[in-house]
Length: 319
Image 1 (tube, rainbow, N blue to C red):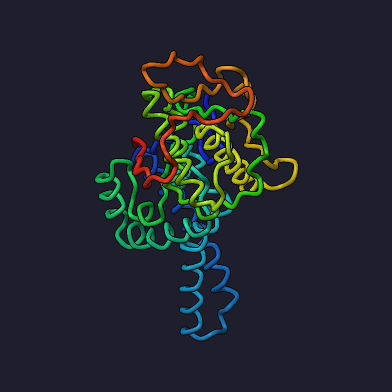
Image 2: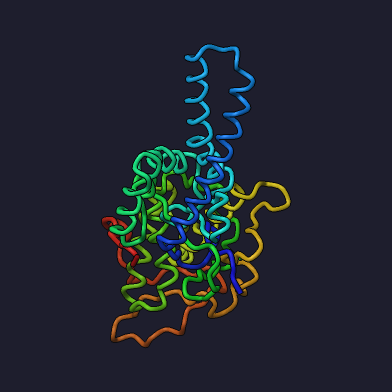
């Protein structure tokens, strides 16, 4: 079974699209745009036959810009990265952190695409995609986007367990506008892989990420909230906001489309013992080891936790 796994509200690693599928999607989009351009041009020329040659030339240039440049930009913006060709090939344009693209991303991709696709017949785009490890053309590099496969088998590899229920809605008023996409990606990758890390390293990394996140938001992490739980709760709040922005505030508010598994959704028992499995700072050798920590209620951070006033993490998640 194939599932929709792109967008910020998902819990699966992005899978970059291959060059053949991307080329086919571009050809389909260009074919549709050219047909629309020819039809509109014939209609406009017939309607403006009384105008002089200079006016007709100006209209032709305006239609070219609107249909072959502005059209793809508008389609990608309104469809959140899915043009007709990408929809047929099962592809989608997303941000580097997996979130839905916005107008500025589509604008940069469209303007640079005129040079590397239309003016060079796609030669520059093909070379850039072959050189890039993730198959990105120049428009994707400058826009900070990535074309990914939209229908892939659903696995639990990148699933982000939900935060504990006693943190639900606690960060709804937090200002997340100053948090860069790179930090969101680091947080998400950490939460999906923290069980694979050494407990002491995982706890230290969680505190550093929580400190960076609190610095960006201007609000310190609540006292007694474990750093991993704080990261998961703030990430879930951002996912909910992105879902509302992408899918509207009506009946679909805060809800991902069919086939998308959201952290904290039906795919996990929120707050169940052992569901999240946060890292715990190992105690000194002289003390007996503590019992495994669960998110049943708020608990103070370990006394031996590293101080919060430390430099930025520098944590770069694996590609």
